[in-house]
Structures are given as C-alpha cells and as structure tokens.
Length: 349
Image (spheres, helix red, strand yellow):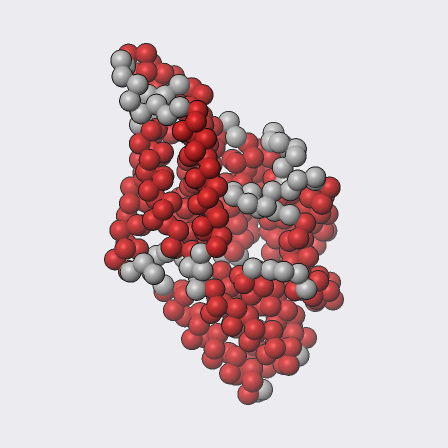
C-alpha cells in the first residue's frame, strides 16, 4: 500500500505532467512539423511497432486499475508511462505519430482521472478529463474525445450539479455522432444524460435517454475494457438508479433487484445495495433499510477503495432520520457516519 508521502509525490508529478501536456497540446502540429524539417536527429520518434506496444500497455494499465482493490495503487505505473508519452510529445514527430501519441495520452489521462475520481480528488479528475478531451480532439479520435467529455460531466452528476453536467453531455453527444458506430460510445453518453435528467426531475427526457442507452444490446461486440466499458449488463442498475433519483420506487426496485441478481463488481454491488436501502427509507421500511444499507457498508469496506460507494452512502444518511427510532437504523446511521467522514477528508488519491 503506498504511503502518504508516496501519494503526495505521485500527485505532484501528475500535476507537473498535466501542466506540461496542456502546453504541448497548445502547439500547432504545423509548428511541430516545421521543427521536424529542421532537425537532423530522429531522437524521440517512436516507430509504429513501439506505438503499438504503448497502446497495449495502456490496455494493460486499465486492467491493473480494474483489478486493484485500492485504485491508487495503479497511479505510479500510469504516471511513469504517461511521462514516457509526454517526453515523446516534446520531440519532433510526423503528423501521424503526433496524432497517435495524442490518442494514447488522451486514453491515459482518462485513466488518471478515474484514479483521482476514486480518491475523491474531483478537481484533479476534472483537469485530467479536460486534458484527455483536448488530446483526443487533437488525435482526431471522436469516441475517445466523447468519453473524456462524458467522464468530465459525470463529476457534475456525482456532485449533484446537474445543470453543469448538461452542456458537457450535449457536446459529448455531438462528438459521438462522428465516431465509430460499432462502439457503444453514444449509448454510454445517453446513460449519463439519463442520470442528469433524473437529477433535474425530467422524467420523460430520462426515459428517452434510457431507451437510447438500451440500444447498446443491438451491438455485436460491445466494449468491455479500457477507456470504454459499457454493455447491456449495466442497464438495469442504471435504470434503477435513475428511478430512485426521480422518486419512483415502484419502477426502481424491480430494476435494482434485476441488477443485484447479476455478477457485479464490489463497487457496483455496493451502489445497487445503497439504492435499494434508499427505496426502503422512502417507504419507511426499516427492515429493508438495515438489510441493504448494512450490506452496502460491508461492500464499501471490502473494496479498499471506497470513495464511490462511501459518497453514495453519505447521500443515504439524511434519509434515515425519520426511522431513527429503530435501534437497528440508529446503528446503521452510526456505521455510515464513521465510514463516510474519513472518506471525505481522505488524502490523494
């Protein structure tokens, strides 16, 4: 497990790379090519095979992130690879290599953003996603670009700033239309739009967005790894979460029970359990609250990387007040308090 000092070093280095990359992306490609014509050396020009290896390493790092119980454990590896890619961007490159490097950087900054987001460093995550969007745009990779915009928007959804998320999602929708129709990009954007509409209380718009997202099941090969991981297996939990937000437990509970019957990661399971506890709280069902809320707390503790589930549990806590006469609900309330308070103050990542 990385120490607090290691975390601080990793964060400072990541911020340095973010600043450097932002400056490099501001340099027009034509200027880079002009330098290339004047440069006699080929230093810093990776070949096609090397770029392929870098792309494979990006995929591997996403897998490391997915399987790490504490997501911050992936950051040192990601930071080192990002440093290599950034070094190449500082060197003269052909237009083709420049675009490929920008795509790889756009991919990796999305992963950095995920690590920051998991550690409750939302400002750092937003900066990573903004850089990822710029790099992906420079790469001419609309699907990668749309995903970066969607991840950026999700921070607003997560912090319940739905009005701030909406313009980013409109942009992501527009960009995704230019992308590869065999990828589920536009359907993932639709899911996050549905969450935004739910937060804004727009039931009909939410329903339409969920219907759009449901078309992901029509794809032959939906993405399941790397920077785009949206399949039909997520639809039930997304529907349930939206209907909880809209105050429709009658629609939420069947979808959430369907999701709970699936094989879910610990974090996703914790989220579904929290939503089911919320349904119970709104019905005044103390038994359901304790059953699912307690299981969600256990799931969050089990992850070793509990920022996401912990934050969601924090939204459940105020809804327990009408049920605090029940001693079991009071015990759950204390568990959530002791569990979520340190999360909000936890250092990076």
